[in-house]
Image 1 (cartoon, helix red, strand yellow):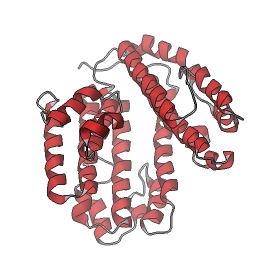
Image 2 (cartoon, one colour; image 1 turned 60 degrees about the vertical axis):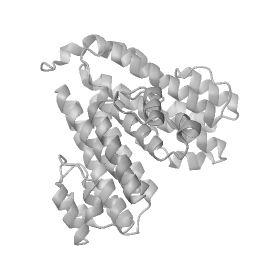
Image 3 (cartoon, one colour; image 1 turned 30 degrees about the vertical axis):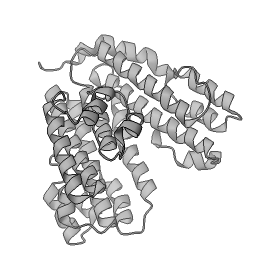
Length: 333
């Protein structure tokens, strides 16, 4: 791929700007949270381009979000002047689907309903590969990863180890795909994403009492903090916040340390992780033109869909408006 110039994205930036007015802002989120009935909540969703919902239910929300995500990726594929940029984000759905199918006891009965569309590999194609145990038609890297993950799960009977292995493979492939695009934004974003996942792995391993060998299986090279330093921190019960001092994760690491040592709240830490990524997106959203505003639009829509699932599921579960607001990420709080 040739070097990227911001002027390559003049048309795609303009087309995305036309759609930004439909993004959920705080006022729309407040209306959704405070909606007095299902019809009022559905009206807010329709205003933002989510189509006609037949009812306010988790199943209907899954259908609407799946359709919307597919249309979103198709639109961006059409307007982006370079191939491969969206694969950096599509790859996450491939690995999500692999994880779901690996842990499904009866693939023929349950597997298809667990899959999320919009990966590089169509969900039906991946499902068929698992049913027939024939992965020859999949991308080479994914085929090898699936075979290794199946062997690991069969040998250890430990789904968590398999998840760590797949999360690591996904991060490695995301990083490699971002570098291929020659986009500074994608390279920086995936580096930050990688760092956050490494920090999460450290916090999780510490919190549940896993050793450094377990943690090593999850860490990926290429972050602001080296993997050997992370492993040493776990081995010596060191200071996580000191390890990350002077990096973009310095404040986040403090919350992670609280959780690792039993003093913090895991859900709040996870919220802070998402907020840091959203801050990165917001920094690039208002660039005049280039790949940044186009990809920021995708990431904001992705965050929006997560928010909608949180709010709608919370409403259906009977959470109060105050409880729903506590769950919101930075962009909507």
